[in-house]
Length: 446
Image (cartoon, rainbow, N blue to C red; front, side, top):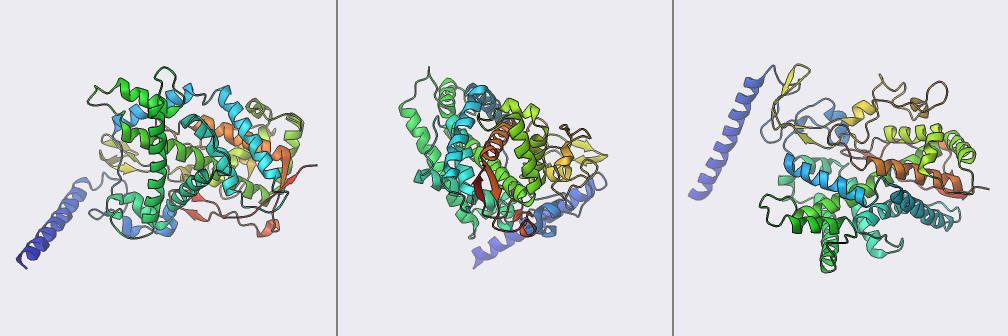
């Protein structure tokens, strides 16, 4: 009895101290912080958020609770190594273009096998996109019917969709607490653990056959770097970072591009006139008898405008990835204290009426000038901006162009619904944007 009373007293004292500290800090900084409601200890402004419309809520409320981050030096070292290593294995070079073209050919054959029947394109696209990054990270592709591969893709899809749910948003902000509570986040943990276990086994296999003079893939290169730095007590190249960096590459390299394409197909079924113009441009520039090349993009302004508009409208990661301010920063006359977590709200730029005439509509004219030539926009930031922009941007651009043009070179899209009944609004918008599920027929072009 006495012990429980002491525990409650200690808990009350700690909470009281946090409240006093929070109030004191707010008064001290009042007038210098950006506008917004006063945050509570620990939970910040979470009570002011509508978790079913997280993006809209965060456009109104600026301050949140805590988020776990890698420190700045860790992020810099791992990012620099990843960029260099991925380039060594062909990312951004002609070698990876040939790999994408090969995988696009496998996809076309798989789609021909559907014989024009309505299908859900989700795993057709994720298998294809995932195999490109798999060839870099693991050194090989998966067969489309590989059961382990399909299981991995389901885990990734489930985890990605979880980030758009209200519970996923709670976890993102309060992961330290949510790990210990019951709820749907436990299924997401299970899926992520399954992915992590797969990566761990891949690493183990690579360790047993490693030749330091002939790295075969990203994992080999990281293992070699670990050997080189084994005497460095401050090294960031250790097993846990290898596992998580590989998982991040595999996950991001699969879900973002495949989901963008899936949303794009839905938009083209809603706007068949746009699809028809892409067909015309493909026939004029590429024809039907050779595979599309990335260099064709320069002669296809309308197709490039459509891809940009799919990315702008789809707004895959509307809040960007959270960042931590490394020093006291003045922004538009306000103080953002060192250590504050900030979200670069990319969606606010992608839907800014100052840059896009009809930001809520899907309209490729947003990226075309009066002469029908492609027009760049400073507000096109789906890959984020600054030093921490997505270093997979070059690969993603190449994949989006080559996969889209190859598919449309061979097929036309057909929906079981009249275009008026097709709903292009997202299914969920949280830390990710998830398009609605649908079926589509890939009808061979005559």
